[in-house]
Image (cartoon, rainbow, N blue to C red; front, top):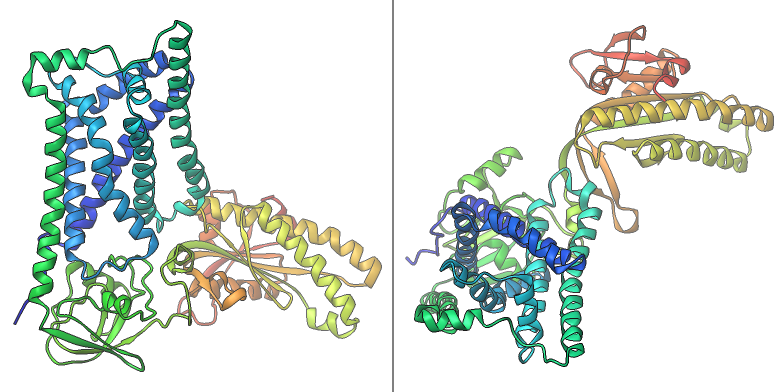
Length: 566
């Protein structure tokens, strides 16, 4: 039996090496573009800073890290291209692959001309020489450099986004990172173009024609035949070409070898697809255009592509360490596998465990927000006491007006405290804090501050409502901190970011505790401890909550107590 292609490096190790090498390369290009942008101040100033840049990246360790990372990144790219059973990729991944393959062609001439002479201690490039080189000649070198900046930067940003988008801190920093991603290459290109134009204008004012740099490179090449930069450049192109050619040959050989032995992947209540033996189930879904969730893009870092193995004509390869860890974390059944990591050797029948909506956009960036993730957050519940009694004796229009005024008070208080309103449930409001922050203490203080504002503003609203409608508004608030599942839940236009889990249930129960003890706020002990605020003198009780086996200490805050945390 023909065995499917197995990676020469475990997927987890390859993923970690890819991220590490990518971060090193991104750090280099970021500092490089930052240095370029300093030419807007002056070329001499940029050259002075360039000396620091060279100290960092041209010492033995920096050189090893930089060029080693580039080689590792290139080899991992070849590995990925070989292991893929098809090249039908989502647009983002296709752009990243094409841009990545074009990088060596775009940067080879610049790297060789700037680095190789310096290795011999003869000629070291400066911004004056590089900009003059870009601005003279037939324009091809300058065009390649502009394209290189755009292509390298976009490729790096796509990779960094894919690696970091599930981090807790990323949503908070995303707008600033996006602005930086636009600003940095723009300033770098503008700096080079402006100074190139200034050099040309200065040369014309002297009645001269701007020529390439001062001829140092040519003189050193004449004295050192090994400094034939054109030959070195051709050899680098040959090296990368051979690498790509090897992948093409190996893929072709594999395709020929697998031409006969195909397997059938049958989807329960769905189509049947014939694919080469060893194709992953997720790849089969994409080949057969079967809607199949895969939030992480098939890298084994999520469980959204998981399937149930209904039937198989033969044994499946055991899960890898990375797949096994994911399955254990979600407490998956024994017949559950990650489709991106499972490559059947026999006919198999599978059932999708997460059915996507018909026509859903399964591969876009929206998945990041839709993906569920576990996060420690603060949940705040607030509602009006005796609202049923109030609504029974009032006109419907009055009730709607009253609720909208009350909701505006709560909504503003939550937003001013950096929280977000999750939903309105009858006369109740559910709000979340800590969605975009990694500091539990900050989230707890935000929730207490919001509760204090709600209490104070409701008292003001109560005076108005008493005069106009004879209504005495009294509220009850419950606040709890703990782990919850956060993700986009709903359908169509009514889908929204929300939280589910025991923490949410406890927050709702604490609101009832506030009503039971006739206080404004009932805050769980974790809230008061993590907020790092004084709570001496506050009343507390050990209460039993429905659905929990153990009792919980709850701090009971009167209206005056709550206002202390405004």
